[in-house]
Length: 441
Image 1 (tube, one colour):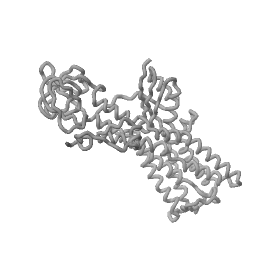
Image 2 (cartoon, one colour):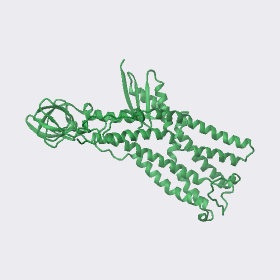
Image 3 (cartoon, rainbow, N blue to C red):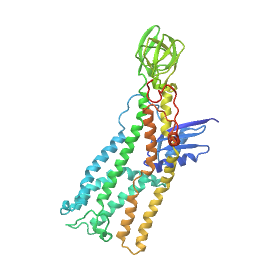
Image 4 (cartoon, rainbow, N blue to C red):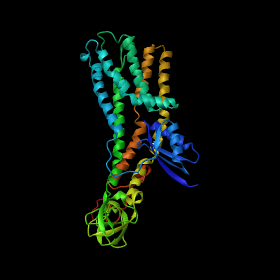
Protein backbone atom coordinates (compact mmCIF):
# COMPACT_ATOMS: atom_id res chain seq x y z
CA UNK A 1 0.00 0.00 0.00
CA UNK A 2 1.12 3.56 -0.71
CA UNK A 3 0.11 6.73 1.09
CA UNK A 4 -1.63 9.19 -1.19
CA UNK A 5 -3.03 12.70 -0.87
CA UNK A 6 -6.34 13.57 -2.48
CA UNK A 7 -7.78 17.06 -2.78
CA UNK A 8 -11.50 17.65 -3.31
CA UNK A 9 -13.57 20.71 -4.11
CA UNK A 10 -16.56 20.80 -1.76
CA UNK A 11 -19.81 22.57 -2.64
CA UNK A 12 -22.94 23.09 -0.57
CA UNK A 13 -21.20 24.19 2.65
CA UNK A 14 -22.84 27.22 4.27
CA UNK A 15 -20.97 27.57 7.57
CA UNK A 16 -18.09 26.15 9.57
CA UNK A 17 -20.37 23.51 11.10
CA UNK A 18 -20.79 21.99 7.63
CA UNK A 19 -17.00 21.71 7.24
CA UNK A 20 -16.71 20.06 10.65
CA UNK A 21 -19.42 17.57 9.76
CA UNK A 22 -17.78 16.55 6.46
CA UNK A 23 -14.39 16.30 8.16
CA UNK A 24 -15.85 14.03 10.84
CA UNK A 25 -17.45 11.75 8.23
CA UNK A 26 -14.21 11.44 6.22
CA UNK A 27 -12.11 10.75 9.30
CA UNK A 28 -14.35 7.82 10.16
CA UNK A 29 -12.93 5.96 7.16
CA UNK A 30 -10.16 3.51 8.18
CA UNK A 31 -6.67 4.97 7.91
CA UNK A 32 -7.89 8.34 6.65
CA UNK A 33 -6.78 11.76 7.88
CA UNK A 34 -8.93 14.56 6.47
CA UNK A 35 -9.00 18.34 6.82
CA UNK A 36 -11.88 20.42 5.41
CA UNK A 37 -11.49 24.18 5.04
CA UNK A 38 -14.73 26.14 4.84
CA UNK A 39 -13.07 29.35 3.63
CA UNK A 40 -11.45 27.72 0.58
CA UNK A 41 -14.19 25.07 0.13
CA UNK A 42 -11.56 22.34 -0.18
CA UNK A 43 -10.83 19.04 1.54
CA UNK A 44 -7.40 17.44 1.81
CA UNK A 45 -7.43 13.73 2.54
CA UNK A 46 -4.41 11.52 3.29
CA UNK A 47 -4.54 7.75 3.47
CA UNK A 48 -3.47 4.44 1.94
CA UNK A 49 -4.58 3.75 -1.66
CA UNK A 50 -7.37 6.30 -1.60
CA UNK A 51 -10.05 6.18 -4.28
CA UNK A 52 -11.50 9.67 -4.94
CA UNK A 53 -14.84 8.09 -5.90
CA UNK A 54 -15.18 6.58 -2.42
CA UNK A 55 -14.38 9.91 -0.77
CA UNK A 56 -16.88 11.75 -2.98
CA UNK A 57 -19.55 9.16 -2.05
CA UNK A 58 -18.95 9.84 1.67
CA UNK A 59 -19.29 13.60 1.14
CA UNK A 60 -22.49 13.15 -0.89
CA UNK A 61 -23.93 10.85 1.78
CA UNK A 62 -23.44 13.70 4.26
CA UNK A 63 -25.61 15.97 2.07
CA UNK A 64 -22.94 17.88 0.14
CA UNK A 65 -21.24 17.64 -3.26
CA UNK A 66 -17.58 17.02 -4.06
CA UNK A 67 -15.38 16.75 -7.13
CA UNK A 68 -11.72 16.34 -7.99
CA UNK A 69 -10.49 19.87 -8.80
CA UNK A 70 -9.64 20.70 -12.38
CA UNK A 71 -6.06 21.83 -13.02
CA UNK A 72 -5.66 25.62 -12.72
CA UNK A 73 -5.33 27.63 -15.90
CA UNK A 74 -3.57 30.93 -16.33
CA UNK A 75 -6.48 32.63 -18.10
CA UNK A 76 -8.55 35.04 -16.06
CA UNK A 77 -11.77 33.33 -15.05
CA UNK A 78 -15.15 34.93 -15.36
CA UNK A 79 -16.98 36.30 -12.32
CA UNK A 80 -18.35 33.56 -10.13
CA UNK A 81 -22.07 33.20 -11.01
CA UNK A 82 -22.94 32.19 -7.45
CA UNK A 83 -21.35 35.35 -6.09
CA UNK A 84 -23.23 37.47 -8.61
CA UNK A 85 -26.53 35.75 -7.76
CA UNK A 86 -25.87 36.37 -4.07
CA UNK A 87 -25.13 40.04 -4.78
CA UNK A 88 -28.38 40.40 -6.70
CA UNK A 89 -30.34 38.71 -3.89
CA UNK A 90 -28.70 41.04 -1.35
CA UNK A 91 -29.44 44.25 -3.26
CA UNK A 92 -33.11 43.36 -3.88
CA UNK A 93 -33.59 42.33 -0.26
CA UNK A 94 -31.94 45.54 0.95
CA UNK A 95 -34.21 47.67 -1.25
CA UNK A 96 -37.29 45.95 0.21
CA UNK A 97 -36.09 45.86 3.83
CA UNK A 98 -35.01 49.50 4.13
CA UNK A 99 -38.58 50.95 3.97
CA UNK A 100 -39.75 48.30 6.46
CA UNK A 101 -37.07 49.34 8.95
CA UNK A 102 -37.93 53.04 8.55
CA UNK A 103 -41.66 52.46 8.94
CA UNK A 104 -41.21 50.26 12.00
CA UNK A 105 -38.83 52.55 13.88
CA UNK A 106 -40.02 56.09 13.01
CA UNK A 107 -43.61 56.73 14.25
CA UNK A 108 -44.19 59.87 12.09
CA UNK A 109 -43.87 57.68 8.98
CA UNK A 110 -46.54 55.23 10.17
CA UNK A 111 -49.66 56.12 8.19
CA UNK A 112 -52.92 54.24 8.68
CA UNK A 113 -52.55 50.53 7.83
CA UNK A 114 -48.80 50.95 7.25
CA UNK A 115 -48.25 47.50 8.75
CA UNK A 116 -49.82 45.82 5.73
CA UNK A 117 -47.39 47.57 3.39
CA UNK A 118 -44.58 46.40 5.67
CA UNK A 119 -45.90 42.84 5.41
CA UNK A 120 -46.02 43.09 1.60
CA UNK A 121 -42.39 44.26 1.47
CA UNK A 122 -41.10 41.79 4.06
CA UNK A 123 -42.69 38.63 2.62
CA UNK A 124 -40.32 38.32 -0.39
CA UNK A 125 -37.30 39.06 1.84
CA UNK A 126 -38.23 36.45 4.48
CA UNK A 127 -39.06 33.82 1.84
CA UNK A 128 -36.99 34.48 -1.29
CA UNK A 129 -34.18 36.54 0.24
CA UNK A 130 -33.63 34.04 3.06
CA UNK A 131 -34.13 31.03 0.79
CA UNK A 132 -30.44 29.97 0.84
CA UNK A 133 -30.66 29.67 4.63
CA UNK A 134 -34.01 27.84 4.56
CA UNK A 135 -32.78 25.41 1.90
CA UNK A 136 -29.52 24.65 3.73
CA UNK A 137 -31.37 24.15 7.01
CA UNK A 138 -33.81 21.72 5.35
CA UNK A 139 -31.00 19.73 3.69
CA UNK A 140 -29.13 19.41 6.98
CA UNK A 141 -32.32 18.48 8.84
CA UNK A 142 -32.88 15.59 6.41
CA UNK A 143 -29.45 14.28 7.40
CA UNK A 144 -30.08 14.78 11.09
CA UNK A 145 -27.74 17.74 11.48
CA UNK A 146 -28.06 21.36 12.61
CA UNK A 147 -25.83 24.22 11.44
CA UNK A 148 -25.67 27.99 11.66
CA UNK A 149 -28.24 28.08 8.87
CA UNK A 150 -30.65 26.27 11.17
CA UNK A 151 -30.46 29.18 13.60
CA UNK A 152 -30.85 31.76 10.85
CA UNK A 153 -33.82 29.98 9.28
CA UNK A 154 -35.56 29.41 12.62
CA UNK A 155 -35.01 33.03 13.66
CA UNK A 156 -36.39 34.50 10.43
CA UNK A 157 -39.35 32.10 10.33
CA UNK A 158 -40.16 32.75 13.99
CA UNK A 159 -40.08 36.56 13.60
CA UNK A 160 -42.10 36.49 10.38
CA UNK A 161 -44.52 33.84 11.67
CA UNK A 162 -45.16 35.75 14.88
CA UNK A 163 -45.84 38.92 12.86
CA UNK A 164 -48.42 37.04 10.76
CA UNK A 165 -50.10 35.80 13.95
CA UNK A 166 -50.15 39.31 15.44
CA UNK A 167 -51.56 40.84 12.24
CA UNK A 168 -54.30 38.29 11.54
CA UNK A 169 -55.20 37.06 15.03
CA UNK A 170 -53.90 39.75 17.40
CA UNK A 171 -54.33 43.47 17.61
CA UNK A 172 -51.46 44.47 15.31
CA UNK A 173 -53.64 44.48 12.21
CA UNK A 174 -56.02 47.18 13.45
CA UNK A 175 -56.03 50.57 11.66
CA UNK A 176 -53.99 53.18 13.48
CA UNK A 177 -51.54 50.70 15.06
CA UNK A 178 -48.20 52.35 15.79
CA UNK A 179 -44.78 51.16 16.92
CA UNK A 180 -41.73 52.98 18.19
CA UNK A 181 -38.04 52.20 18.53
CA UNK A 182 -36.99 51.56 22.14
CA UNK A 183 -33.86 50.18 23.73
CA UNK A 184 -35.91 47.96 26.03
CA UNK A 185 -38.87 45.85 24.90
CA UNK A 186 -42.34 46.00 26.39
CA UNK A 187 -43.29 42.49 27.56
CA UNK A 188 -46.96 43.44 27.83
CA UNK A 189 -47.18 44.33 24.14
CA UNK A 190 -47.84 40.69 23.26
CA UNK A 191 -49.74 40.22 20.01
CA UNK A 192 -49.99 43.97 19.44
CA UNK A 193 -46.40 44.16 18.18
CA UNK A 194 -44.93 42.85 14.93
CA UNK A 195 -41.34 41.86 14.14
CA UNK A 196 -41.30 42.27 10.36
CA UNK A 197 -38.26 44.56 10.50
CA UNK A 198 -36.41 41.88 12.46
CA UNK A 199 -37.09 39.20 9.82
CA UNK A 200 -36.10 41.60 7.02
CA UNK A 201 -32.97 43.11 8.56
CA UNK A 202 -31.59 39.84 9.93
CA UNK A 203 -31.89 38.40 6.41
CA UNK A 204 -30.16 41.42 4.85
CA UNK A 205 -27.32 41.50 7.38
CA UNK A 206 -26.61 37.80 6.98
CA UNK A 207 -26.83 37.97 3.19
CA UNK A 208 -24.28 40.79 3.37
CA UNK A 209 -22.04 38.55 5.47
CA UNK A 210 -22.45 35.68 3.00
CA UNK A 211 -21.60 37.99 0.12
CA UNK A 212 -18.49 39.22 1.97
CA UNK A 213 -17.46 35.58 2.48
CA UNK A 214 -17.88 34.84 -1.23
CA UNK A 215 -15.88 37.94 -2.18
CA UNK A 216 -13.11 36.96 0.25
CA UNK A 217 -12.89 33.47 -1.25
CA UNK A 218 -12.73 34.93 -4.77
CA UNK A 219 -10.04 37.41 -3.75
CA UNK A 220 -8.01 34.67 -2.07
CA UNK A 221 -7.65 32.89 -5.40
CA UNK A 222 -6.08 35.99 -6.98
CA UNK A 223 -2.64 35.07 -5.62
CA UNK A 224 -2.68 31.75 -7.44
CA UNK A 225 -3.99 33.38 -10.63
CA UNK A 226 -1.28 36.05 -10.34
CA UNK A 227 1.39 33.36 -10.14
CA UNK A 228 0.00 31.46 -13.10
CA UNK A 229 -0.31 34.65 -15.14
CA UNK A 230 3.48 35.11 -14.85
CA UNK A 231 3.98 32.31 -17.35
CA UNK A 232 4.26 32.82 -21.09
CA UNK A 233 1.22 32.06 -23.24
CA UNK A 234 3.08 31.35 -26.48
CA UNK A 235 6.47 29.97 -27.49
CA UNK A 236 8.68 30.07 -30.58
CA UNK A 237 9.25 26.42 -31.42
CA UNK A 238 12.25 25.39 -33.53
CA UNK A 239 11.02 22.75 -35.97
CA UNK A 240 13.51 21.47 -38.57
CA UNK A 241 15.33 24.77 -38.54
CA UNK A 242 12.18 26.86 -38.89
CA UNK A 243 10.66 29.00 -36.17
CA UNK A 244 6.91 28.95 -35.59
CA UNK A 245 4.75 30.31 -32.79
CA UNK A 246 2.80 27.73 -30.79
CA UNK A 247 0.78 27.81 -27.53
CA UNK A 248 2.82 26.93 -24.45
CA UNK A 249 0.24 24.28 -23.56
CA UNK A 250 1.17 22.33 -26.71
CA UNK A 251 4.85 21.94 -25.72
CA UNK A 252 6.12 18.49 -24.74
CA UNK A 253 9.36 17.32 -23.16
CA UNK A 254 12.12 17.31 -25.78
CA UNK A 255 10.81 20.24 -27.82
CA UNK A 256 13.36 22.94 -28.72
CA UNK A 257 12.30 26.58 -28.44
CA UNK A 258 13.93 29.89 -29.25
CA UNK A 259 13.77 32.68 -26.69
CA UNK A 260 14.51 36.14 -28.06
CA UNK A 261 15.68 39.06 -25.90
CA UNK A 262 12.83 40.45 -23.76
CA UNK A 263 10.74 37.29 -24.02
CA UNK A 264 9.71 34.95 -21.22
CA UNK A 265 11.13 31.44 -21.17
CA UNK A 266 8.03 29.31 -21.91
CA UNK A 267 8.85 26.31 -19.68
CA UNK A 268 11.63 24.69 -17.65
CA UNK A 269 14.54 23.48 -19.75
CA UNK A 270 18.25 23.38 -20.58
CA UNK A 271 20.09 25.91 -22.70
CA UNK A 272 21.55 24.15 -25.77
CA UNK A 273 22.83 27.21 -27.63
CA UNK A 274 23.47 30.88 -26.97
CA UNK A 275 24.46 32.97 -23.96
CA UNK A 276 22.39 35.57 -22.20
CA UNK A 277 21.34 37.02 -18.87
CA UNK A 278 18.09 35.77 -17.33
CA UNK A 279 16.04 37.74 -14.79
CA UNK A 280 14.90 35.08 -12.30
CA UNK A 281 13.67 37.53 -9.67
CA UNK A 282 10.19 36.00 -9.58
CA UNK A 283 11.78 32.75 -8.38
CA UNK A 284 14.88 33.74 -6.42
CA UNK A 285 14.22 37.35 -5.40
CA UNK A 286 17.61 38.34 -6.83
CA UNK A 287 17.50 41.68 -8.61
CA UNK A 288 20.62 41.07 -10.74
CA UNK A 289 20.09 38.88 -13.85
CA UNK A 290 21.93 35.57 -13.91
CA UNK A 291 24.34 34.75 -16.74
CA UNK A 292 23.47 31.48 -18.53
CA UNK A 293 25.03 29.48 -21.34
CA UNK A 294 24.91 26.01 -22.90
CA UNK A 295 24.06 23.38 -20.28
CA UNK A 296 22.51 25.86 -17.84
CA UNK A 297 19.10 25.15 -16.38
CA UNK A 298 16.43 27.79 -16.91
CA UNK A 299 12.98 28.09 -15.40
CA UNK A 300 9.72 28.93 -17.13
CA UNK A 301 8.30 32.46 -16.65
CA UNK A 302 11.76 33.97 -16.11
CA UNK A 303 12.77 36.71 -18.57
CA UNK A 304 15.57 36.59 -21.10
CA UNK A 305 17.09 40.07 -20.91
CA UNK A 306 20.19 39.51 -23.07
CA UNK A 307 20.91 37.52 -26.21
CA UNK A 308 19.14 34.79 -28.15
CA UNK A 309 18.75 31.43 -26.39
CA UNK A 310 17.87 27.99 -27.73
CA UNK A 311 16.29 25.91 -24.96
CA UNK A 312 15.36 22.22 -24.84
CA UNK A 313 12.21 21.72 -22.78
CA UNK A 314 12.64 19.31 -19.85
CA UNK A 315 9.46 19.89 -17.84
CA UNK A 316 5.97 21.03 -18.83
CA UNK A 317 2.59 21.61 -17.23
CA UNK A 318 2.20 20.56 -13.61
CA UNK A 319 5.89 19.55 -13.35
CA UNK A 320 7.29 23.06 -13.81
CA UNK A 321 8.64 25.28 -11.03
CA UNK A 322 5.84 27.79 -11.63
CA UNK A 323 3.19 25.09 -11.17
CA UNK A 324 4.96 23.90 -8.02
CA UNK A 325 4.85 27.42 -6.61
CA UNK A 326 1.15 27.55 -7.41
CA UNK A 327 0.61 24.31 -5.50
CA UNK A 328 2.50 25.73 -2.52
CA UNK A 329 0.18 28.74 -2.43
CA UNK A 330 -2.90 26.55 -2.73
CA UNK A 331 -1.70 24.16 -0.02
CA UNK A 332 -0.93 27.11 2.23
CA UNK A 333 -4.53 28.30 1.95
CA UNK A 334 -6.03 24.82 2.38
CA UNK A 335 -4.38 23.80 5.65
CA UNK A 336 -5.70 24.55 9.11
CA UNK A 337 -4.13 26.35 12.02
CA UNK A 338 -4.81 25.33 15.61
CA UNK A 339 -6.96 28.39 16.29
CA UNK A 340 -9.07 27.44 13.26
CA UNK A 341 -9.58 23.90 14.53
CA UNK A 342 -10.67 25.34 17.88
CA UNK A 343 -13.23 27.57 16.16
CA UNK A 344 -14.55 24.57 14.21
CA UNK A 345 -14.94 22.52 17.39
CA UNK A 346 -16.79 25.33 19.15
CA UNK A 347 -19.12 25.98 16.20
CA UNK A 348 -20.02 22.28 16.04
CA UNK A 349 -21.64 22.45 19.50
CA UNK A 350 -22.72 26.10 19.33
CA UNK A 351 -25.89 25.54 17.31
CA UNK A 352 -27.44 22.73 19.42
CA UNK A 353 -26.68 24.69 22.59
CA UNK A 354 -28.42 27.82 21.27
CA UNK A 355 -31.50 25.83 20.26
CA UNK A 356 -31.64 24.27 23.73
CA UNK A 357 -31.28 27.72 25.31
CA UNK A 358 -34.17 29.04 23.18
CA UNK A 359 -36.36 26.14 24.30
CA UNK A 360 -35.29 26.68 27.91
CA UNK A 361 -36.18 30.39 27.67
CA UNK A 362 -39.62 29.54 26.30
CA UNK A 363 -40.36 26.91 28.95
CA UNK A 364 -38.84 29.00 31.75
CA UNK A 365 -41.07 32.00 31.08
CA UNK A 366 -44.14 29.78 30.88
CA UNK A 367 -43.28 28.11 34.20
CA UNK A 368 -42.77 31.56 35.74
CA UNK A 369 -46.36 32.42 34.83
CA UNK A 370 -45.64 34.71 31.88
CA UNK A 371 -48.12 34.82 28.98
CA UNK A 372 -47.48 32.73 25.86
CA UNK A 373 -46.60 35.83 23.83
CA UNK A 374 -43.82 36.84 26.22
CA UNK A 375 -42.38 33.31 26.38
CA UNK A 376 -42.37 33.05 22.59
CA UNK A 377 -40.75 36.47 22.27
CA UNK A 378 -37.92 35.39 24.59
CA UNK A 379 -37.30 32.25 22.53
CA UNK A 380 -37.26 34.22 19.26
CA UNK A 381 -34.85 36.77 20.73
CA UNK A 382 -32.48 33.97 21.76
CA UNK A 383 -32.47 32.49 18.26
CA UNK A 384 -32.05 35.78 16.46
CA UNK A 385 -29.24 37.08 18.68
CA UNK A 386 -27.23 33.90 17.94
CA UNK A 387 -27.74 33.98 14.17
CA UNK A 388 -24.42 35.43 12.88
CA UNK A 389 -21.92 32.69 12.07
CA UNK A 390 -18.76 34.80 12.33
CA UNK A 391 -17.42 32.35 14.91
CA UNK A 392 -16.45 29.75 12.35
CA UNK A 393 -15.54 32.27 9.64
CA UNK A 394 -13.20 34.76 11.32
CA UNK A 395 -10.20 32.45 11.83
CA UNK A 396 -10.15 30.75 8.38
CA UNK A 397 -10.78 34.00 6.52
CA UNK A 398 -8.03 35.87 8.38
CA UNK A 399 -5.52 33.09 7.74
CA UNK A 400 -6.61 32.69 4.12
CA UNK A 401 -6.27 36.40 3.36
CA UNK A 402 -2.92 36.49 5.17
CA UNK A 403 -1.37 33.69 3.15
CA UNK A 404 -2.88 35.02 -0.08
CA UNK A 405 -1.59 38.54 0.50
CA UNK A 406 1.82 37.17 1.43
CA UNK A 407 2.11 35.28 -1.84
CA UNK A 408 1.14 38.42 -3.77
CA UNK A 409 4.08 40.17 -2.10
CA UNK A 410 6.45 37.31 -2.97
CA UNK A 411 6.32 35.59 0.43
CA UNK A 412 5.38 31.91 0.19
CA UNK A 413 3.93 30.87 3.56
CA UNK A 414 3.98 27.09 3.88
CA UNK A 415 0.60 26.94 5.65
CA UNK A 416 -1.75 28.66 8.12
CA UNK A 417 -0.11 26.78 10.97
CA UNK A 418 3.21 28.40 9.99
CA UNK A 419 1.60 31.85 9.84
CA UNK A 420 0.11 31.26 13.28
CA UNK A 421 3.51 30.29 14.70
CA UNK A 422 5.12 33.55 13.54
CA UNK A 423 3.70 35.27 16.62
CA UNK A 424 6.59 33.68 18.54
CA UNK A 425 9.28 35.02 16.15
CA UNK A 426 11.54 37.62 17.77
CA UNK A 427 14.58 37.51 15.44
CA UNK A 428 14.81 37.52 11.63
CA UNK A 429 18.17 36.80 9.94
CA UNK A 430 18.75 37.94 6.33
CA UNK A 431 21.68 37.38 3.99
CA UNK A 432 24.01 40.21 2.94
CA UNK A 433 22.29 40.99 -0.37
CA UNK A 434 19.16 42.37 1.26
CA UNK A 435 17.05 41.18 -1.67
CA UNK A 436 14.70 39.39 0.72
CA UNK A 437 13.34 42.76 1.82
CA UNK A 438 13.46 45.26 -1.05
CA UNK A 439 14.66 43.54 -4.22
CA UNK A 440 17.51 46.09 -4.56
CA UNK A 441 21.21 45.69 -3.84
